[in-house]
Figure 1 (cartoon, rainbow, N blue to C red):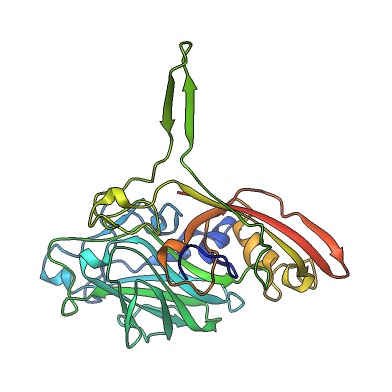
Figure 2: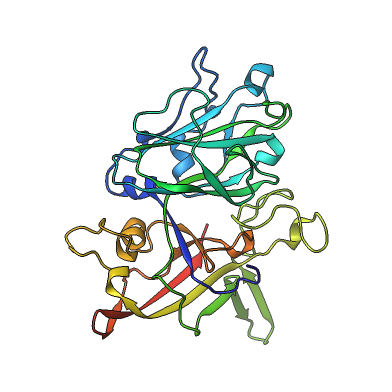
Length: 344
């Protein structure tokens, strides 16, 4: 779909950040460090594994993949321990990467035990966008964001992303691999149906307008965009260096986009768990979205159309309210309103 048309929204919610917010150590989500003979390359000096999960996509982690012929043949292996078999995995998203420039490709693997070997058995996945597929190995054709969904839900404890060179299995000799953020976890298609027709969409620039004593007006825009470079945006889902006018960065969409949505007559089974002592039973908005983001605490990926393969239909966003208000309107039926805004 295009034009940001509203169908059934989808929320992509990150598992590592939810686990860390509940006390799991960040060391459970790691990059296999360089060791003699295993052909893995880790982050450059000055970067740490946890920065891949800091929900700051513009903070890119650099990997030394261009240094010499050996490193250009190496692999980056990111392994996430989801702490048990109850954690379902639906998607992998790699935000603000430069895999097109660094000539990289990636695969996804899941396993009941820790994944330590090079070239783990691939998991069947489907491209959402920017992940051209061949034998379940995905090659982005541009820098920015790549998303794939697992062909079937996985309850395996470990999930891994291996990134390797796409130029004859080699990385580029001039540009190191860079990754802003990695997200894995579950997605949920809103409340089981589309929102009411009164959806509000807005784009704001955080403009402060001041008027002098003489009546002159002065403006300060707090965010025109999260500036990156002329070739790559620091704002996820904003196409790098392209637009109507050609390969010029100033044609990128700027500002922060937001949505206000109301969902009427939502079945309680789509919102609440059968036993409210645990939010993890079934596929519910409370358990799979609200509890895992902590309300406005943790960002997520949002699209107003769950079937969209258009990058501009997606936002890196957070809730703008810290209370999930529900109004009962019929037997076992509720009205729910949510407010979402792009974040960085």
